[in-house]
Structures are given as C-alpha cells and as structure tokens.
Length: 212
Length: 180
Image (cartoon, rainbow over all chains, first blue to last red):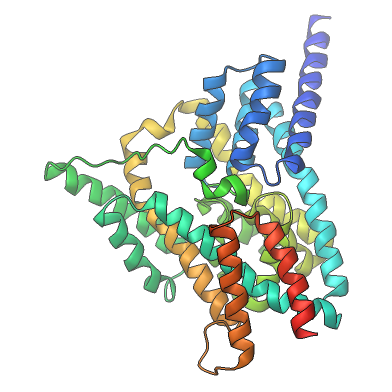
C-alpha cells in the first residue's frame, strides 16, 4: 500500500514540475536569467521545495555546463526535487511550449518564404540579425575579457575559426585556459579567474534568452 | 540516414555548446553547410526566426534545421539530440559533484573558454555579414542601405536596449518598404 502511495506522489511531483516549467518557458521569452525571479516564486516561495540560495547555486552551476541556462537549470531543479523522473519532467516542461512555437513559425516561414514581400522583409532582417549577433558579441566580450591573456586568446582565435572546425577551437580554448592558469600560478601572478557576474540584467542573455 | 546524421550532429553540438546561444552559430553553420542542408543565407533566416521565438537560439535553430531537412520528425530528432547531453551531464554532476564551479580545474578551463565564446560570436557576425553582402567589394546603394539598417539596429540594441524581437519586426517592415 505504502509503495502505491509514493508512486502516486512521484507522479504528482512529475506533473507539478512539468506544469511549473511549462508556464515559465514561453512567458520569460527564452528563459535565461529572466527565469530566476519566476522560479523563485514558484519553487521557493509557493512550494518551499528549495531555498533561495540553492536556486542561485543551480544557476551558477548551469552557466558552467554546455547547453542553455534555462534548460540546464530547469533540469537541475527537477533532479533536486523529483530525481531522474523530475529532471525529465522539468526539461520537457521548459522545452515543449517553445518547441511548438518555433515549429509553427518555421512551418509558416517555409510556406511564405517565396512571397516577394517576405523576401524583401528578410533582406532587411538579415542585416539586423548581423547587428543582433554583433550586439551579443560586444556584451559577451565585455564579461569575458578580464586581462591581457584573455584578450590575446580572443584575438588569436578569430582567424583560427576561418580554418579550423569550431569544436576544436573550443577544446583548444579550454586547454589554453588550463595551461595559462598553471603558468601564471607558477610565476606567482594572482589571477582573477572568477569574475563574479551577479548583475543578471547586464548579462546579454537576460534579454537574448540563451545561456552562457 | 538523414535522421541519424541530424541526431549525431546536434548531439555533438549539445556537448560542446558552452555559451549556449549565439556562440553555437558557427558550429551549427559549419555542420549544416558541410552536409549541404542549407546555405548560409537560409541559415541566417533560421537565426532570425530562432531569435523571434522564445527559447534559446541553439535549441531553436536545431528545431528549424531539423524541420527543413527532414520535416517534423527531423525537428523532434534534432531537438532530442541537442537536449540529451545536457540531461546526461546534469544527472552525472548532480550525483557526483556538488559545486563544479568551485573546482580550480574548471575555473582554469573557463578562463580560456570565455574569450573563445566571445570570438565564436564575433566570427558568427563576420561570416553572416559576408554571406549576406554586408561586407563586399561590389559597392552599391543596396550595400549602403543594408549597412544603414545594420547600424540602426545596433544603435537600437545598444543605446535604447530594445528587445531583439522588436528590432526584427521593425526591420522586416523597413525591408518591405525599401526592397519590394
């Protein structure tokens, strides 16, 4: 009897988690850091599943993993609350609404892309997309470049990207980071590895909806 | 076969997608043009749609590339591919490590990774500018008008802190007036 009840409870948490993140996904327009206050309200204040600083920790950790902050932190919170099942529920919840919205927009685009008016609109939109990416680049560089070495790594890797697969450049960057830190420590420099970035509103992803 | 290629591609991308969104554009673009799934210009449109929708750029473009290559099944497969690494890594880390960000080796790694994320985004901007005739030797009024739209969009984002969706919508209207 007892086991049946816990099973029932597990599924209850599964659907609760799914629903919480299902609601948050589209509202915050891309999740990212704009999600934090909403998650705190649902998970910390209303249901008391986690403490506020635990949520902050989850976000700090989610930034360091590959993938997007929104999906990572949802999955993480799901795991903390409801185990593996919970993590799947939260991930599905945060992903499904946007999946359908994007798919609908995509289908619409492929239907009307040959319309001359749409073609004209996209000529201009493409130039704006370049501006949006340039804007993201400026914002990201501002937080990533903390000294001469990081500036050097950034400048050196741009031409590399024209010749080497970006995945190798990423791996090379991680390796360079480890080697530089070792050398600097050996030479007795103190390096500020951790540039605390708690000012979420200044982070490009607050508006961009993606995660660094 | 195409479905397997889509899954494989986005699964690998999922594992290295540090800096989640815009930094992933060069990787997706490289793979997409290697397989011949899309031209860079079409891929720019995908990014525009991805930017207009809620949700992270990396996942959104996986959905769109998947859909245009292999229909709705392609969209589902690509999305699963890009999401799976996150869930695998999180389950591992949640079980074994508590605060990965406090380990010195990870901090050192990110010391090198952050500037790479920035350069990936700069590269994405450059490559899109090239393939969409913003940087070109054939100077014409068309190029000038595109550069003007680029500059104006950047000002709206940087100075007036507009959300990208408004920039895209307004730019589309400007395009209809100017080019049709």
